[in-house]
Length: 212
Ligand code: ADP
Image 1 (cartoon, rainbow, N blue to C red):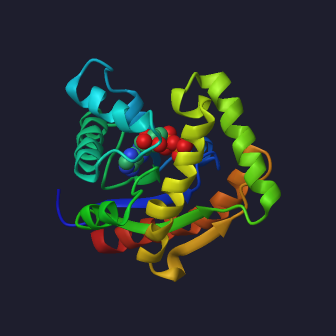
Image 2 (image 1 turned 45 degrees about the vertical axis):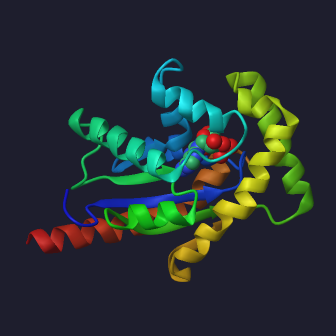
């Protein structure tokens, strides 16, 4: 792939904020393809070398090492591309859970052009309580080990604050939009679309004029 051939919008925010829900919904809109790094790790066979290595970190609420994460990202994206699910010349990736550290931003920069960052951000204390309750509900619904334990949930929030939050500063402020994540999935999706639909339009226009 050529330099920065992957165009992406980044869904960014704390654990439980709804990146996955919004990513899945956005991925149903033609021209957007959802990519969840958490799902990529969960899809690994638990008996494979990589699966075992990833589980060591995910079960503690820690980040999987950056190089391993980026390698898996490119491998999975290559699979989506060869299956025709992702077409880099037409689609915009809706990235969910990657990049999650400053080093990952640097490693991705070579290939990924970030068109917009949607920061799903709670601004009040009440909202953070809502996040914790979403994680508890998800633990029951999806049988996710990393959501079931209070200490692991707490660790994920600490890791988010220390390692992931600084990622935001790596993007030009003009491409970062803060979106209120509280509401029904459809209400939040409308806010996300208000940010990304114009970005998709601009990308399509730019492609059309460079092809002309
Ligand atoms: P959440 O919904 O809490 O944000 P995810 O499903 O995105 O969680 O990720 C679950 C776990 O997978 C993370 O806690 C982390 O251990 C691992 N993980 C996901 N994405 C990354 C990443 N980009 N880098 C390192 N580890 C990751």
